[in-house]
Amino acid sequence: MPCNEVSLWLYSRDAMTKREKFFSLEFFPPRDVEALSKLEGTAKELLQIDPAYISVTFGAGGSTQTGTLETVRMIKQLGVDAVPHLSCISNTKAEILAILAEIKALGARHIVALRGDLPSGAGLRTAGELMYASDLVALIREHYGDYFHIEVAAYPETHPQAHSPDEDLANFVTKVNAGANSAITQYFFNPDAYYDFVDRVQAKGVKIPIVPGIMPITNYSQLSRFSQMCGAELPRWIRMRLAQYADDRESIRQFGIEVISKMCQELIDYGAPGLHFYTLNGSASTLAIWNNLKD
Image (tube, rainbow, N blue to C red):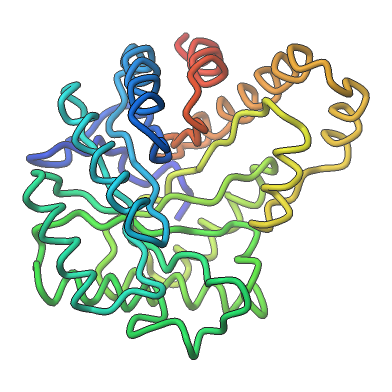
């Protein structure tokens, strides 16, 4: 089934309703009160996008987890659906269930369920009671039934720790079969990787919406580092163009807006169910890309 036959959805607290296209955003928890206040200003600037939701990342350690829930609370006060990420690595089932109870108490009904990053030097055998995102999805369904809309991660260019594309695809199908409702992809710069992944997933009978994750280009060294860690291919032609700008941040940003806007338009024209922007807690580039897509 081609991607343009996938239903286009807007996530809301009460239901999922059809919409021509939607945009969603991702923030990471600020480190302190001052940074949270700054992020609130960024969120208000991005409200003009009319985001379907704003997700908030989740890290290992109590302070980061607390920051996730504080940021969710701030976003909800702005009248936007806030979607906490929840990872299971290094947490016990009891700890995960306690966090889920807090999420429910906040009124959130949409979760991004992830395995999370392994601690440095650790292997899966020492990861804890829940070793995979599929285990987390199954735990949520076991204790909360259909209360939560569960989003999972997808890797069009293959998870960096997977032994093969087929193994990675099988892992994704397992997450879906455990009860996932939809997926957000790792960012990419080659749309063909997304199209191929969707085709392969649908050939396995998976029909859930798979939303492309979009990374604005604002900082070459940062982007190169992120891409190496997460297995996202940074095409040579983009690397060469970025390298020529050296420390000229504005030229990099303008080039990034042009490149990512074209890719986003291609994805929308193909029929992607929406676009999920990894904002890195900034607004300027995401807004510029969105403005290029409005017409």
